[in-house]
Length: 246
Length: 222
Image (tube, rainbow over all chains, first blue to last red; front, side, top):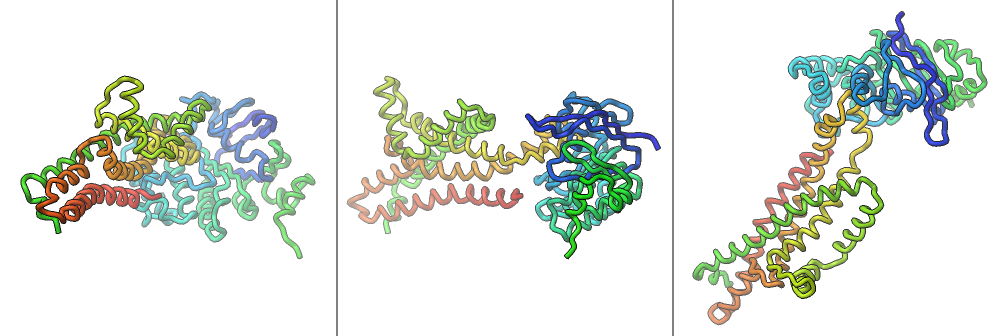
């Protein structure tokens, strides 16, 4: 399969702390890569670098063979190709659900309103929220908001979708409805980079799992080898924190 | 009951004229306050130490000084010390704008800093540039927060204009007193009728504004 995203020797510091340390990664088209690791290991910063929310200090990122630069103008172009969903509810509170979804395609891609709305309604129907189209974000539950946020990213037809701990702020019973949507996206062959703390979900959705610590890739592998036969002590220790025995 | 004095001559018209003066002073002051308040409020979010120190002192002065004292300082003080002759209307507009700008700038600062960073980021992440982000995402949210609050400020200003009679402006309360004085002999109960009418006039002026602000607040609550 062809490579869609390539990261070469990416480094990033916040003052004295090295957040990303010479990180390299290649993602193939249609691949689902899940990144796990302790908090503060640089997972989120890594995703944020990919769509330019953090400045790239050292290293290079290539999307579809084209170099991603921190230049403001080019960044907007890149962001059209990389969708991102965040941990906290980032919907625009002054717009209805439908307006939230259609804003960017109409303003950024200059597509026709009628056509965008038709697509938005189809996507909303797919995530089971068609009836909420005229509601405001405050009228939705956390899980519903995140499903809308996913739709809002999807309608831009991104080549890569970045999901940054999208269930971390949700009540446990709402995690499922959001992750089911992500699973269905994986099945239809979307390229995704997912940061999550849901290990069972990671196992189910990933083609490849990466363990990140101190800004470095410590171990990576297929979900089977990653979870059942971890090689490094660090990963073993990390995975142990998720299992309970009496 | 004393309402009959209002039917004498053009007394009722005079009262309404007095209310007009109060509205005129407060609306001009509000317009100035909103304009200057937005500028100062935006400057305050820059976190510049000089601007912050200045605005803190300014806001504190406005908070602790009774408006009447400010009115006296400007109207009587400026004439003597600076040698400029300010009319009572101009003095009161200066004082009310001085007060309103402080309140407004604090509201603007609050509205601006109340907008979560994620709003900027998620807009950028959708490929929108800075101009589109401000135009479609940030500014509409600021306006929604600001309008109900600034309407509140308008009603408070209208109420507080009753102070300006202290520097000789003939506004609604002053007109009322004049009517009462003039009819002391013929209608000894005029005070009740006149002040009750003034109460009603203030109510009629402020209540719709206050309702509008409640309505907008409810409509736009997030």
